[in-house]
Image 1: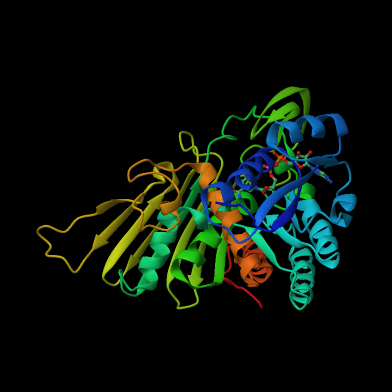
Image 2: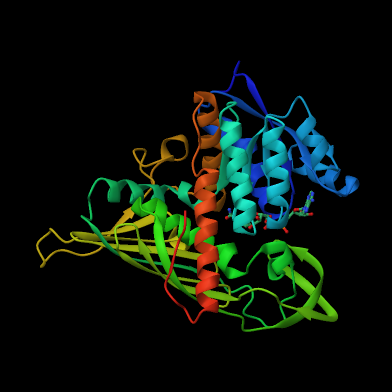
Amino acid sequence: MSEDKPRIGVAMIGYAFMGRAHSQAWRNAHRFFDLPLEPHMAVLVGRDEQRATSAARQLGWDAVETDWRRAIERDDVDIVDICTPGDTHAEIAVAALEAGKHVLVEKPMANTVAEAETMAAAASAARGRGVRSMVGFTYRRVPAVRLAQQMVAEGRIGEVRQVRAQYLQDWLADADAPLSWRLDKEKAGSGALGDIGAHIIDLTQFVTGQRIAGVAGMLDTFVTERPVAESFSGLHGTGGTERGPVTVDDAAMFLGRLSSGAPAVFEATRFAWGRKNAIRIEVNGSTGSLAFDFEDMNVLHYYDATEPAGTAGFRRIIVTEPEHPYIEAWWPAGHGLGYEHGFVHQAVDLVRALGAGEDPTPSFEDGLHVQRVLDAIERSSAEHSTYTEIGD
Ligand SMILES: NC(=O)c1ccc[n+]([C@@H]2O[C@H](COP(=O)([O-])OP(=O)(O)OC[C@H]3O[C@@H](n4cnc5c(N)ncnc54)[C@H](O)[C@@H]3O)[C@@H](O)[C@H]2O)c1
């Protein structure tokens, strides 16, 4: 499928949780999808040469650098893929854009509005030189989510009246789960709010086609001190006897108004025992409803209120038909997709946009808006949940 295609070189920075997911995507995107350019996994960046070399071998990267600055100078690198914690995003992304490299940066785009503004300005300047940028709000690329977005746009639920969106996990519910960079404000910017709340902000805006115009927030920290981690794998680690402070929120609740004035209610927590990765959205419109839960990610629920009441009911659409978004490249109907496919679709959409000379989405301006929503929620929470408009 990819024979004789020009190559596009990728440098990936960070090779842990997201690094593994992105590597899987770069390895497979052109093997399943017809792309205008073939991604070349040119270089993996990790600070420890021995560990990075072993990761590069395992994940399929051709070379290793121990400093991201060297990676963005390389002639065989066209895309810089940032899979590091939030405190590094702004510096790496701006430097890469200025060096003429396209950038894919993980979410949340930055740790502060000021950083996000700098990044959006750099992206805007780079765009004039044909250098493009994208934020990794991966859940947009789940076929059932994309189908929901299409159905809202087609008017299949009428006018959007209400949204409820949740992102529920439980990996911090154990008070002895150890500290990680995700619990350190300096590294992560915020807690559940930026880590997973950012996803439901993007998801809501993507599915409804509207922006969040104002919010009222309430943040809570349930466990203020935890064991310092001795080792980590993915989200889970082993703690020692030393303890340290948690400096971020554990749970974020907020109300929002969409640009149409429609109300939305949000909840992001890593303390919901039994909920492993329940990113959910339900949209109620004037003529129907749509509902999605990532824990059943191949399914979209649809209620059509124009049907006779006696036989109307939620329809369970299994989103694995060839006509569904992204599915044609994969398996026969009913042979479901998993977590990793969203990352493949992200790489596919980015490479297609670059091949077509177009800007991929979500853009750094979209990322900046999400950052402004996160910031407004924090300010609202500090002001007794006062309704706070999102500035431009
Ligand atoms: N899209 C999603 O669904 C999703 C899911 C999880 C995490 N994320 C985001 O991805 C980013 C990374 O999260 P993660 O879960 O992969 O974290 P992680 O802790 O698993 O991995 C971070 C990696 O970055 C490396 N690193 C840190 N600073 C570095 C530097 N200066 N130079 C080189 N490497 C450096 C670390 O050594 C580690 O390998 C964060 O922004 C996070 O919010 C997104």
